[in-house]
Length: 94
Image (tube, rainbow, N blue to C red; front, top):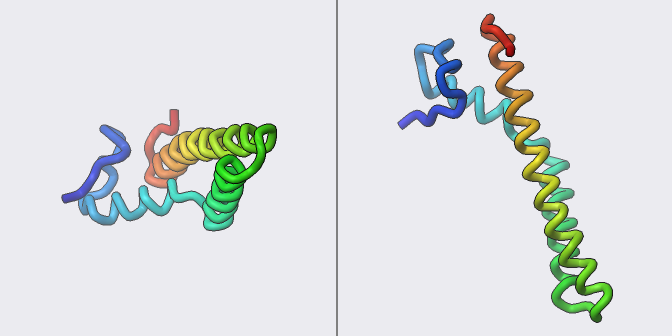
């Protein structure tokens, strides 16, 4: 089954599989951001578990904040992808 991620504005394709593939490519994070995020979260949580007290708390804070930053950037990527796809298919990019 095709998943609809764009709502009512995704009527520009007759083939929902192609539409979903283009949507997935457009909103995907760059590989370097994903690698950086996983590395920072892994190191921060490792420090959070195994370090002494002041560094342990700092490790947990850094790890959680990196996850929050990644999620915020994901929302911005979705908005940008929606705008770019609408523009490329001749729809209003409001």
